Amino acid sequence: MIQEKRLLDTFLDYVKIDSETGNERAVCDRLVADLRAIGCTVTTDEAGAKAGSNGYNIYATLPGVEGSEPIAMSSHLDTVTPGNGIEPVVENGVIRSKGNTILGGDDKGGVVAILEAMRVVSEQKLPHRTVEGIFTICEEGGLRGAKNLDYSRIQSRVAAVFDGGGDVGKIVTSAPGQLKLTAAVIGRAAHAGVAPEKGISAIQVAAHAVAQMKLLRIDSETTANIGTFTAQGATNIVPERVELQAECRSRSTDKLRAQGQHMVDCLQKACDQFGATLEYELETSYLSYEVGEKDPFILQIEEACSALSITPSQVASGGGSDANIMSQHGIKAVVLATGMDKVHTVEEQLTLKNLEDTARLALQLMLCQ
Image 1 (cartoon, rainbow, N blue to C red):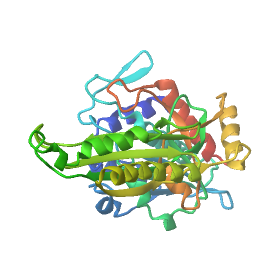
Image 2 (cartoon, rainbow, N blue to C red; image 1 turned 180 degrees about the vertical axis):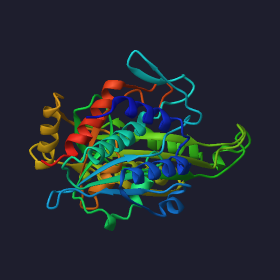
Image 3 (cartoon, rainbow, N blue to C red; image 1 turned 60 degrees about the vertical axis):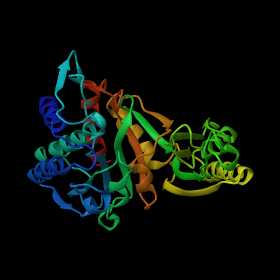
């Protein structure tokens, strides 16, 4: 029932629309027009002003059979850089860019799959559940679109977030929460050749702290990483200031908070030992989510996969997505794979089979169960 050529043509059109994070307006306008042409009721919001974007979140409703359980389907509209001037190429069943940009399958593969499935149920007048298409901006920039959704507009209590890597059929039933740590270690400047003993080297203090931290893979649920460690100055001056940016993630909220506090404690102890000062902010980016392997929604997804001869598999993820934010607002959200591969690189690619299977799975989930 999916029209493969239309699906591919739509995907190629969408990836050619520049939509790096914060510059989604053009793709937002195109999607609104396409959704309204199907017969969806479409509304937008003012999330762009809060998220630092010229675009907006999109809420599209396709009313279904009365009494059926509504389902939300979501994908994000922004891409990472370099995402301007994308020229897609289709060869031997694989879609790539020409090699100087990303492809944008993350996440326009999900966007057009949902759009095609909506087109099919509308055109063929298939009995279907009420479908709410939720399309967000600024996902790549810290899930800011999802954080600024108007959740009072969403009636669905379950959501399929088409934004996962790997072949279609993979269901991300759990994903970690994330804390971000921004810190400054402040020492005391002095002449490094004349009176170094009068200074307090912020680099020495911060390096000592980092050396005491548990980092990278902590356990099967938890990771931590220092992303930046920055100090600027001349070699003849004891450095006064170091700035760090770090993160930790865990599928356990208790472990997440413990790891964040551990990193702060290491910094504070080093500052106390050397006489430096610590300034820091420990921010919760998002919390973890977990849906049980026998949950009715997971079973629905598995049954939909099986009906299409797609083998389902449940996995745990190490990354966050809009599903994490939706889960904090009473929506049972899980990430579904769309076949995206080598994302965030100029080698990104997507097979035609996975693009088509994503649309078929979206359609199967829309149909009345």
